[in-house]
Length: 277
Image 1 (cartoon, rainbow, N blue to C red):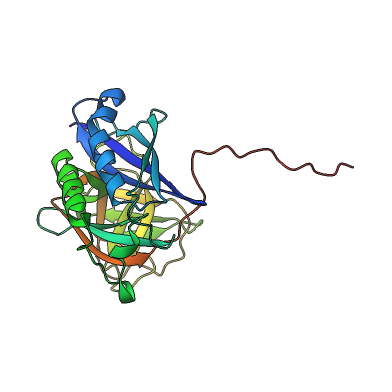
Image 2 (image 1 turned 90 degrees about the vertical axis):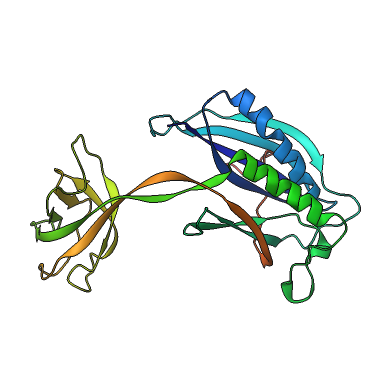
């Protein structure tokens, strides 16, 4: 499988900063090459910013190796000053354009919130007005570049599901589940992971997400104590993995409020003197 790359754009406007992140796959983990590859997307994003906002950097990192394992500590930061369109002032600092990303059959979706937008695209009652100036043309160009690169997001993909045939509780209130063969955990070695349970005892405190440590392909034990009633009726346990979900459509929808934080990539400055003693 290819590498999974995280692409983050770092923005700034007066007294605020924010990031927007996406993911894509690559047969290469050469971050210098990949940074140049996505730079045109960053440059297209600048035209969707108002006059007071600018892009100050982009950062790429390898999130998953070819075998699916996580990689830590490697990233490449490119700093620059890509200012927004000077003819169009920014909307209020916490206004953002809600954009819906969906996969090919729209079964998986994710919202992102584009900040620094033009003031004119936000109209009465928060309606989205894309017919201002060249906004729609700029938006179409950015969307086309994103789709061509195969941008998407990291989501949970079901790996396996099995029937819980029973469970027991030990003196520490840790629950050991037994699943019907062949189970969902496969061969070891095992590590603690999150599963999802539904329908167990019809309604049970154990239903929902739960951290467990597998003991075998068909058994696992809760990571923390859980006070639960005795087993009554079977339920379903599902196991998931993190996977890249590639966007097939990118749909700008509405103007929303999205609170922004402090500027990024700035020096913290000197601390004020503190009294001693």
